[in-house]
Figure 1 (spheres, rainbow, N blue to C red):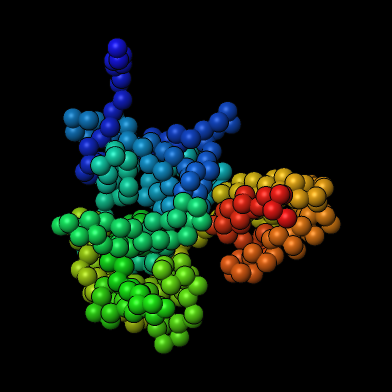
Figure 2 (figure 1 turned 180 degrees about the horizontal axis):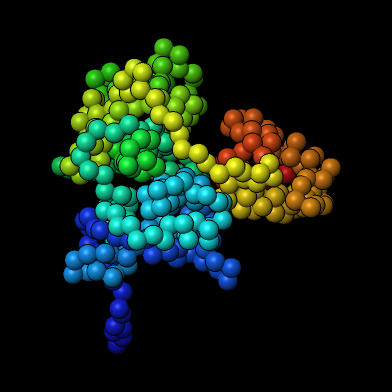
Length: 348
């Protein structure tokens, strides 16, 4: 016989809600913490519904501590994070301000509801990532019985009252393969958006993965850093097809708000945490492969450097990852950790 349990768990229906920041939910004895997940480092927080019949109920949200958290902090406090400490950021965000947020069909906050209009913004990244490598990837979606490859984008507002807020957008992954060749129609939204974000098609490199060009396109657009004018529709998403995104008018510029100084020994929260895990993994794998004492006092020993030259340097060179741990991003570190996890002593 099956047992029936009664729960008191609330899940918000999909829609737009007025909310206040209620605090971080991922915590340990010392306070708020970032957690390693299949989607990378995440900070989890709760928002309290501020109006309507569901007033007082809680809705959850997860975001990257080195990326999306800065936008949330700005929305609620009017300032970028004034510290790298999560407890200090929590105190900064706990204001009486009420903002409108979008809740998805799983009951999670997916972003601030951005009113329809035109915004100055910059491209940040592609949203969907491969769980194993952290690299951006397209997603297969069904539309009227047809499977389509879709690309989901993130833009960040850089001027006005919503500075720091992320705005989503989507377009069809319009690149087609014919054998070793690839083609992209210049009539597609994907082509227009890539051009607007600074991709110069006359100077494209040889792509490493013909089935997924997004990682290299993402890197190009992040380097370009083009100031954009984006059109946001009624649903809070970038909409309007080919003309939804364009470089900002000539002469328009934005002065970035001041960020707190970071000491020379400090790194962003997620990178500090992930780098410690990387060194621990190097020590474990190096010992299994006969390089004893590879890590000491948070650094590679001579044995560790020999292990790195044999098993890390070739992989980094192949994937375009910096050789220096300090120069690696959190995504680089996670990619390298995936490589190291696959090393087995009995294969060498």
